[in-house]
Image (cartoon, rainbow, N blue to C red; front, side, top):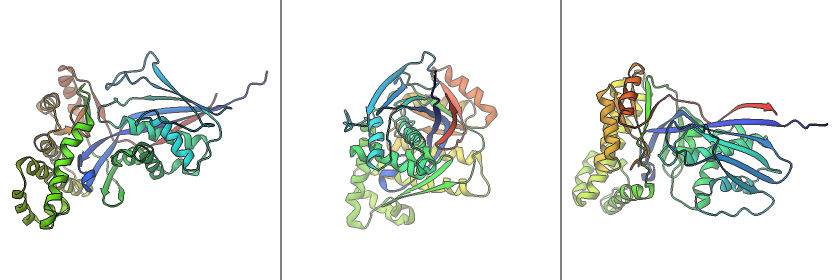
Length: 381
């Protein structure tokens, strides 16, 4: 009997933590983020028909550290011989395939794909973005595209599939950080400028799951629109950006023209931009102080909590407990309102910190910087 051998390709991409810059991207400012060794995995084999059959980890397995020990998957079938129709505005598996086809990538036949992840879903850890990035990488590998090793191209394709395809608001931080890996500095002006930072931060990050689901749309609306409205009202006095306050502190006098709510939120954004610039100098400098780095994280979080209102009592309890057990700094991760938070600590303190927070009922995991989207292996099956 003639048995045809198939190749099986395995790829993965990392989640990320935002070090500095939450709620700054939509203001045209900057973000410093790090890829971490919490990854989304995917594998594929060729089919001889036009069907892309995807088994993806069941979204009910949505908290940090849960294993897919029972092999729970949801299924999706995409027929590339027919027009791809979206069923909702988060139909990202279809949009990824559709975007590649519309962009001229020669996907001529189907694949059997399995996708699994260590990344908690709906917790601000870019689970959707990493799913799209890893699927994009996998499909480019399977068709042996010249772009399969072009991380910036994969990031841009991922952004288009997730954001542009559904005409939704959203930034590029997650896509670029996951695809490029390591430390990434992004500047958001009329175009997005991306640069890698050549440093490995010593010590460890510890990620904690608050077990709280996020209402991202509401959190973004409450944090974003008052600041944008405030900047719009200050155009008449020559203010066009948060940067105007950073580079000329005399402009702070104009804050008195705002109501208290918008003034508070704009001041938080101004101070967080200042903190980001301090952190940039520290991270890119010759000497690095873990204590100073930790304090900058704390200050950044204080603005997110007190100014933008995106923390929760649970996250505050997690952070306070971690500090009491040796953590140097920490903050909510992502848009806030629940989800995950992290702390920064010396390696020798991590076990004690994780145990103390676990005693409260919240799982934690030590995180290190990690590489970006990659092909892990290929085998014949």
